[in-house]
Image (cartoon, rainbow, N blue to C red; front, side, top):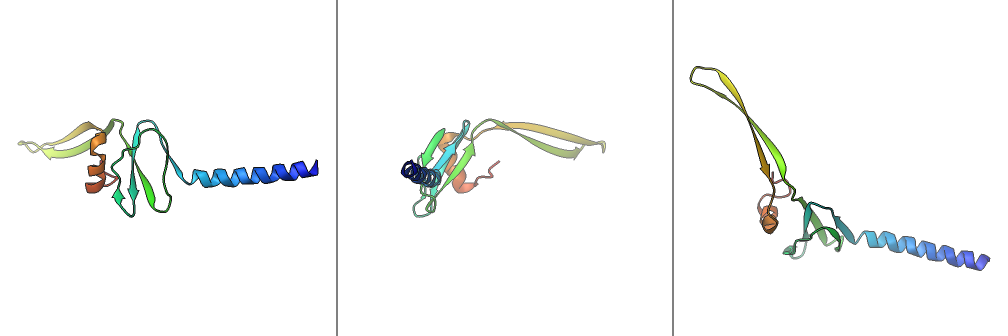
Length: 114
């Protein structure tokens, strides 16, 4: 019985170490998101990753995750009229990035593109 428990302990430790190591090589893209992988050796890869779990090399590659849902942006402005009264204007803009343009957005604007 003791040999069985020792063997079970070794298998449990091996599974725990293997699971911990495997989770370091996986990134998750949630619903309404897309991801690009930045490779430190080759730059941004062309493939756009959809929802699900994807593999990457932790030290060499970094996933860059974009939210592609429609989001609002409020712009406030104060201006004057001809008769010297102030008017406050608010504009609500709905925007979302196109999946095909994510690489250009990351190259030119970065993750904080809004």
